[in-house]
Image (tube, rainbow, N blue to C red; front, side):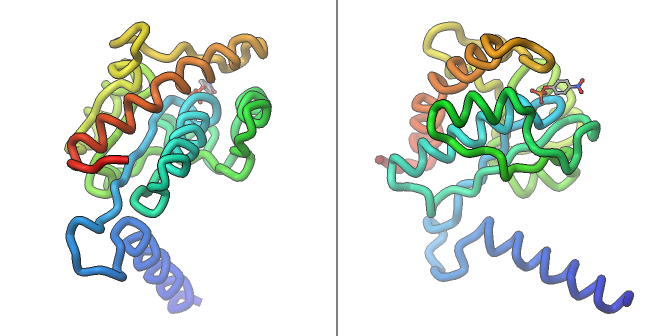
Length: 188
Ligand code: 4NP
């Protein structure tokens, strides 16, 4: 039983490293760009950011180049699906996030993810105290309308709160992708 658990753990670790780097090429440029979105519960805002950014890179034809995930600074909702409000607003815009499951920030996320993008300042403080990724910033640092603030938390709010949250995150996606590609010296 113990051996089976160890084997499962080893296979999981191998799988994670395969997902983060592309083993089919020895070209270092082919390494995947790993981006992690972080909020408090990982059920409202960061699942939307994950779903929307996934769509952006797919639209740009760059899906193979990216490894995208999200997590929460709290363990409160670990294993749960996104909030029904987030699932509904994403579905309204043709994005299915219902298969995502909440997870807590891991101590090795700083090594696993070059880019860690936080949904508000409190999340960023907590993340900065726990891990040291190469790039750590607020999503709204790239907001063309109001940079440097947090995405309001829609948890427990009305459908309008989720609409507003979606709208803010959506308008940050193109500038975020541009920022990442600029640093990676890639073009769409
Ligand atoms: P999120 O929203 O950080 O955008 O996922 C929240 C979800 C749950 C709670 C707070 C915020 N909560 O207190 O359980």
